Image (cartoon, rainbow over the protein chains, first blue to last red):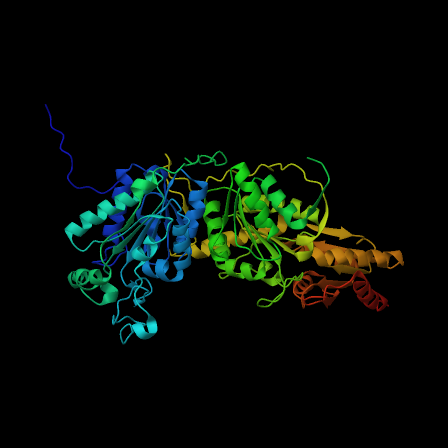
Length: 269
Length: 356
């Protein structure tokens, strides 16, 4: 009798076998993998539509092997609303950075959440605008130096970092809201479970799910990968506590899901 | 289906959209177009559609982008200030080659302006109102019947060319009631939307809807492709109405509600034996350049009537025969500034009598 050995570690099917453009030490790659693992876990690659945002995560379609719609800056939750209302039985997720979701797109995320749109939102918080070169973000920590807060973020004039997971958790339309980090093996495992839960919420038709992921941006923080990784635990987690802030998955139950009307679409080989 | 109805222009537009298969509406309240979302919020849930009153104009255009990316007919409607907010999304739709209907029942401006009939959004509509150098299809109804008919046409042209389409109206065509004969929609044999996202579902290749092109030469090629489509639009899809142009010694041109008033003025002129015709652009983009060129080979004078300080007149001047003279009767919008047929007739007389 032959024993078939299962590989202990392999690339998720939903993730393409390509190099990413992310900087060394950036956590986007890890978070991409966790999202892809969740898609594989529920075997929904064939019926998933990702909505890309503007920023470092815009190249979503280059890394995930799923259908993708690219949204204007901050508008991913509105675009995802349009997609989900048409394709009710498909899985729709957005993947947004902190400038995108917590500054220019604040209105769209709050109202999509409040309507209880049946989508999954992955929110990557690295306390800075990565793509544009490290400017102050709505999540930039007090006293943090960025290219547009060169003397450190002054909360007196620039306000405080926004805790989005907590903010959304008070909305009745939200089914699940949590914050995780990916700075240690234990945190990565927990983050994987939480992201899976956020997708499960949608698979079961339970409503709007939100996961904030604390993430390092070594390049714009001016740190090496190791130091940047350490900063997540040392500076970010004390301000942005990890945890589940709302979990109504048990009582949300199954919402009725209509059939998608796709007869108008031609087949593509 | 061929019953005569007495309805408002805005309601006729909504009826035409539903008849054309539109089942998704996203919008935000603004005068003078509120009948459209009200009609849609009442009718769409009854027929398995979706109506969302969005948190903003910005959200509603992006919901339209998302729905359209799935390959269905969808629309939004608003009025001038709201259309300004939508320009970001319209540019993304144009760049992403997404069809979709945007209705602008114009208010007067600039800024908050007023709610009176205005054509001051002509430039914004036909020159590509957002960033990046693109065009959208722009249709200008001048009757309740056309609010119904041109809405169907807008969906067809938008789907065929994968270019967003706009109905450009104002409070006159939106709010007035007159006879409408609704008719059934017939699909003119449009190609299937195999570009739409649906989840890969057995397909080898992903469907990707995007407007970002960073590779060497990619964006230039993308732009040239879009502009080739605009050229084909100009060649094949121009629509206009000509009234008594054959023997005209003066041509009046106007679109939408201004054309409606001008028609009466032209009739008044004919009644007293003046050889005056009317050329009414129905497609504002593509603009009827050739029609103007041809008509001005024999008629050397054009009077352009607009409810603004002069916008379409620029396109008229670019289109006419080089020897033709173009005059403007522009009435910037505001309460009490709608010209009467008599006032336009006075203008006609002024330029007609100057013909030696």
